[in-house]
Length: 386
Ligand SMILES: Cc1ncc(COP(=O)(O)O)c(C=O)c1O
Image 1 (tube, rainbow, N blue to C red):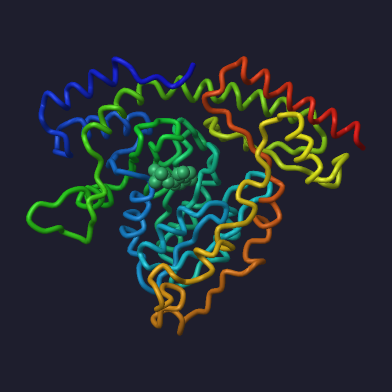
Image 2 (image 1 turned 135 degrees about the vertical axis):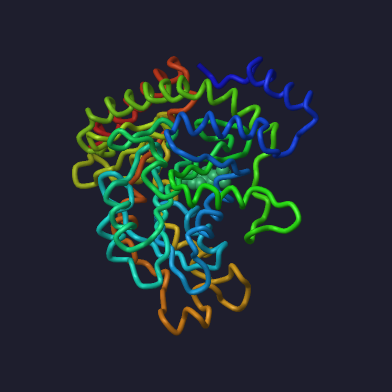
């Protein structure tokens, strides 16, 4: 089943147009979408945003992180680090586990300093990190745990939906995500303190209660969201079938290692990932990549190749121009001299180039058969080349 946009969405959109209220107003479709979404996730509060990036920026702001503060981030993706920078806080990267590719609680613990205000954990490619341990660490140190749930609608950890372990969770509805509305996002929280404060960041009349930049969702987006929310369970079920097919396939190849899915995790099919194991492989990594290309096997090699902090965006402290903030901010530099250097997260650095990915979303069964056949052919050629 491909994604569907039809009468359901048109019905909601018609309600918006008939009402003449196109922008956020309490009690209209954005509110309905928030109420319906929080039921799905099982959170007490859901507050809509125009993107997950703006949601993450708001979450970091709410965690109280600003000048000379640190936010612990995931090194495999850049979103959390950018949200920290947008608040002029210093992104501090903790390492991941080699088997799940997710934030390692021990590395997080080691990265905490008196300046740390928040931890941003990415539940990458539909799999939740060790959220109970991370929450314990956050609570122990008085930090906020922010879950980046851009990939985790209908993903669960120990029986609870992704996004509900953190103090805040942020879901994305960008075009490539499980629930597409074009752009859009939802912040969720169980906290009776945080919920209303996030709401204050949604709209202001005469003067805002707190610094905010109108990161709210509009009514047309919510209309599409209300329709898609009724379809997304079926999408994820279908993506999970494709994910399971890849896992089964790779299980048979001794020199590829499936990503570890802990027993108490329910993954939401987003992207399949495994690693190339050079010690056991019949050909070297570059040769296998070339063979896959020749055989038409649709695999991605190396994801981003390097962790977030090895990108110039983090290396050169240019977010705020020549002043060098936040890492070279005079309020910060006198207390610490944090460098984004190779070796910061050795597991992520070693792991990233070996990661092999392939899409599982919106791939019909016949296309899956074809892709798997091409993959088998690539494996055959690699083994014959040994
Ligand atoms: C893990 C992750 N976090 C955050 C985002 C940002 O989402 P948005 O485009 O809604 O701002 C994305 C988008 O690709 C993502 O993959």
